Length: 201
DNA sequence: CCGAGGGCTTGTT
DNA sequence: GAACAAGCCCTCG
Image (cartoon, rainbow, N blue to C red; front, side, top):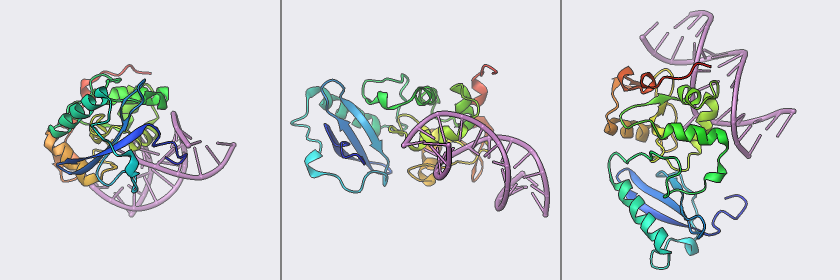
């Protein structure tokens, strides 16, 4: 983005969604095509280069198929998780460190209707004290909704931050069936922690 | 029980 | 190496 190469071999597409307009960035490279980044409403770059607009007619068949499939997933509620880390719709895994890859992998296993804390996610990925680093990663998660960073909350049960806004975070959790013991606090029966047995370091 | 404040920790830039 | 951040934990009041 800052180095000016962000739009090389990439194109953007807007998609209306029940909570606003999403921005999808597709990578077109023949070797590695797929979704490069998904922006929640209000999160993307302000200026979108017109010449990089996604044109289904001229796009490669493979990318067209991926765009249609991803679009359908986004229309479902809740949006299905990615069970496997390197799902073929997504691309650009080389931008992640081993730490980040491990955390995202664990994140993808948190089911709808449940939440985990930043600290637990860190421990689960075998980096016990890296809660804050996990927060940093969640903030730059390129595939929100699919990699469900909205299911990561603070250890004390409060929501924690969210790129798309905490209101959206709460709505997403509510529609997934997460329960609140008080207005701002997640109920303990919605926590996924207990269902995972962590190897004690 | 809750909230505010301070110190600590980690991975990334 | 320093600064930063979508956190955590303990201590008060």
